[in-house]
Image (tube, rainbow, N blue to C red):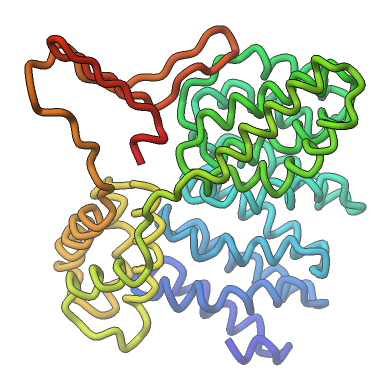
Length: 394
């Protein structure tokens, strides 16, 4: 790709990359070349722009779903304030495509993506603005939270049209949230909640109720990052700034619940070194070309997302054709999957084995829009009762 800096040879070099886009064994090399491709998209010469854009689209469309994790950070850079409008537009369009082809991978980055894409909705260039609107609507469906999914069109509309914030907050406040809440779902709601906290007192109160309920459904303090980073400073101001005593007390409860969720013990996550060792053991070859390191990064994302679909792993490992026989790729992928699954297993909850079980199960409980219990285990035994909440389960 060095020749792309020579304007006369750029189109020819990009054409060479385009020919390799559909060959899985070159995947890691193509992804490594994308920063220069993005740079070429900002070139002054239209033929270079067009050729580079075509390469980006071809590489993105041919990637396995989870390989998108290697490209998404580049797209974040491509949407930065220092980039040219044509680069922002290309990055937004690629992101929208990934939202359809790799929703789980996109969902893992919504904390970074939502504020960035939301900001580009107000870009001065109409092409960038139009691409941002499409991208925002697409990525909002990638949270993986079924409770939030039905509100995505309304949330997206509210981000684009702030005057509709009160109606959107009203709808969210009336929703019964029962599914475990992760950072992706919170990231989608944060722009609306932040604006709502700057609105009327009744809207502020409803936002605080939503925040309190969301925090009760978070099992890992890492997942409340969007609320802590974006919402907490404004929420703290409301504990003193809201004139209505009852609404102020609701804000105080929300603050306490957010602090409690953020201070909870961290759950164990698999580290990259463990995944690299698993991939190395499964492949049985040395990583001379950096392909195993590339696959390990993909495997880490799938492991942390608890994606144990064999086909997804086999597709993500097809780049190993560069270092192992193609016929062995599926076997290597499945072996790595099993090893990563074992590495990611949390400590199992120890049930009481004494006596006779009358009931043993895990459940949540909500009343109206109020979350009462989440990830709660109940064990009934003859002449004995055992009841454990999330804090006791860690």
